[in-house]
Length: 342
Image 1: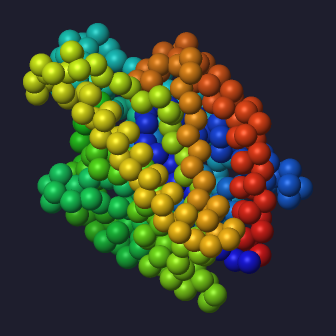
Image 2: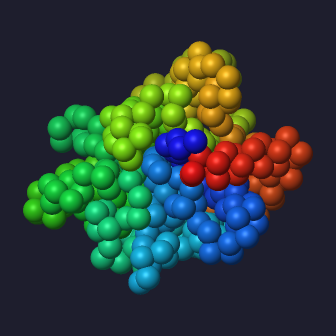
């Protein structure tokens, strides 16, 4: 039975290591189950959604190589975080003084991030991605959400360089300066991280799929014909004590409010989708999967890319997928991804 299969990945900075590890295991299981070592996530999902770090991962999975197949494996994408994360979130002494922790200027110079995105995506355009996607950002000039969509990008108005899409979706306020990117007609857009309004893009992806036609037998599918695999970037959200928070002013609330917005959105989207799918009949009600790795030993801060924390995040991710309940759910997801492909 054919169904539309959605992969959605939350924002969360360097904690993208966590969903990266889960998806590497998922790809390995798909390869084993299909007896095809060249199988990739793009072979089993019809629509990819991502915000911030989740947007970068999604774009990495969709990026075509010379033969039209994915340029990167899930393992390759994960290496960008494990091996280059400390470059992205690295600060010179001068930047530390100037930014005052992100209060008076962006906390990090974006040049290292932009260099890595250039090396990864080069001149590839949004229209060239292998499958449809929806990648979030926010247009500060026009005060509205901006979604990058491969399925619309044949029109030059909606076509951008993939490296610019990645830069825009990850332009987190106080961490990196606002991205200024151009479409293929030369119109410019000042964009920031989509996490400010939609850190968990699963519901946006669901809505997008409802308006799309994937095949003759899946024209504008409803929830009964949509499977969603949604990945978070680490449970155990940062908590704040009343005695400390009650006297915060604008400066004191800057960093906490970003964390609260991101976590609150992720939890709210999960609530809505869980309710939607529980109204369905039979097996269909089980076709929404939310995988939320736990941050156990690592620092919850989304910009802590010290080598010790990178190792801790990797350890937490490996610990999560080693749980029997998670391993069983991944097996169930693999079984359905293959079944719904026919």
